[in-house]
Image 1 (spheres, rainbow, N blue to C red):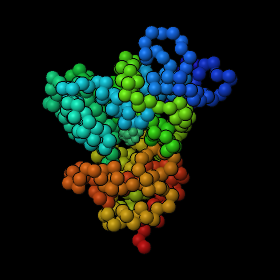
Image 2: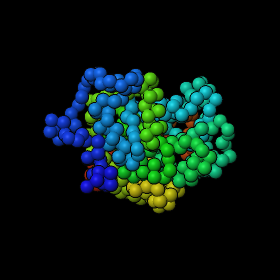
Image 3: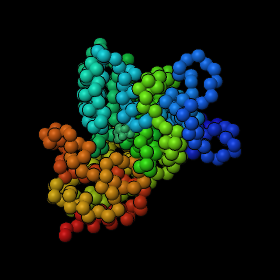
Image 4: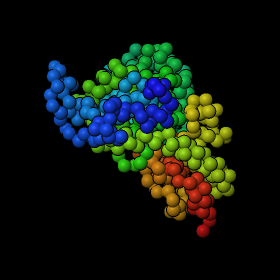
Length: 386
Ligand SMILES: *Cc1c(COP(=O)(O)O)cnc(C)c1O
């Protein structure tokens, strides 16, 4: 069987594994060596050294990442933010402009309006529903378009197809942060995006025990980003490469269980009298449902909901649930709950949060792989009065 044509479940297990196996080992060993014997080759980037992202564990995990996204090449990085910052600092120079979706991951938003702005790289923001904004807002200095597969925490679905098409028509590099979708639910290169970014900390690793990032796309662009990363220094250690590589083998199983768990939990919450509103793209009442059906293979493991009792009810709920942990981050096997107004979106200010529809009582859920019936019973108990 040709590996390249294999389905994603098979690729998750077998892509990137060394051929022949090293010493017969079924599992890729960890090469915890900072430097390697000189093998000839003229340039600095030809030396083999962990920071240059060219040790055996980098190659193995990068090949698996490329296979899962259906890309030519992948680069693994020390965090999701390292992948985002290094990619943008490769594509943009002082004087250039970026077009970015308005509602972005907090760290990314701060990078755009903080460090990149200080370097003379300005960002123009547009609404993810409005692909026509690219044509309207584009200037001769605009180089790239940046979006996220699903918005946090309201799980809005941008017009991903229209945005990719418009970027291409205007000669702009299109970048998508596909962390919330994972390659199981969205193959973004197939939609026309040039580069797909992940915080591998989340679904790709799936076990909440490391921080890593990745960028996947055409060979030439990924090589350029690699050279920039070699200088900026945001490499991933081989041991973390190996942990990520292991986590990715069960990606399809985990994400499908999470899709299923989130979907039945969203339905149960939508029927509950203490719940005012549930944000989950799998619900037919969600404004992005039709688009999500078209774009995604699954509706994902993330949802958020508002309580009739507002902030006090949300705090009572978080104090009463027993299975989920109250913690930031997402995509792990354990269910996590958090109030975005007090965590990821705290820095935003109450007015901007209200404008976006992020109420103080909103609870975000990253659904794990526990039995959905146990989760529903625990949520219902925590929502009951007294
Ligand atoms: C967590 C996250 C990031 C940042 O990733 P780190 O691995 O924490 O650096 C970027 N984008 C999205 C959508 C995220 O959820």
